[in-house]
Image (tube, rainbow, N blue to C red; front, side, top):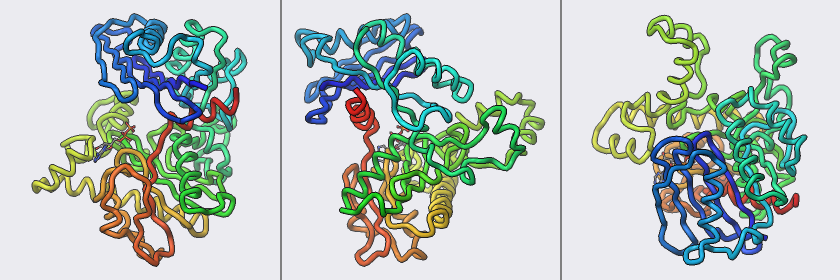
Length: 396
Ligand code: ADP
């Protein structure tokens, strides 16, 4: 079956057409600046050159129409007609406590996703627009919602409650949810498979280090803790997000700098993390370069970032009373050799460490721990689109 995977943002739409039999990507691309002047669509058919076209898209329905036009184009297309698309899988950011797994989309599901809008006001409404636009262009094609939060719904209460008055959980469902669940599930399963271990008897810590970054403790295939919270702001230091901090800092800085709470959150979401700390960039390639050419602030930023990851690993070893494997994934985890080496250097107490030669790889599955290590350290590239396509096929 051919599955169209859609990841819809407020002004963008990422897509992949995946053949679920071969699990190959037939085409992929991106619509940018939807509803804004200067719209741009990128379309890349498998094994062929990427095509980038400037075209204004007044709304997401128009964007979906353009995506379909590209896919069925006589010259550059990869399918003969719309009928070849067997299902659509939508990435949905927040499923609250309502969704512990992917689900086939119907009116009731749409209503339940809408009810989670409050929890992810920047993401869920955009995800819903993506669903409605696809329904308008492809009526009758089954669609599935795959939630970023679902995999983490197995966390026990002790892991998801905040130490604040319980009534806020009861009244407003203020609790930790966690994100990147599709990636944590995919990577933890794949790690067990790759090592030839039974997932039902396997404790793994997954470090998803991308622009957004999160870490999770997965015990016997179930998430028992993860670093992101009510929103993706909690946890590790990220590209532009602060991660954990003393909440009193909000009041302190807002008084000093005369910033509103919304402005403060904008600072914590968009101007903090390694970008804010270094003053250089949110991109680890730029940071590595700056540190390499003697920029002390960039060096300190990287040290601070690595240290936070190492601390989280330690706390998740405690959460699971031990660990069998630690996995690196996403842009930084898959490609940044130094990050893995330095984080690995913190893990001597576990009887493990990163082997310099084995670690000299990028973007491929590998065990990188030293021979004789008590805990395996691995690199497993994530593939959220493929995971969404698999879930979609399973449900339709
Ligand atoms: P997103 O959360 O946006 O999906 P990614 O998983 O793509 O983010 O991760 C982006 C980060 O990965 C950037 O900081 C970038 O520097 C890093 N990265 C990506 N590719 C490479 C590479 N080949 N070498 C080093 N770092 C890389």
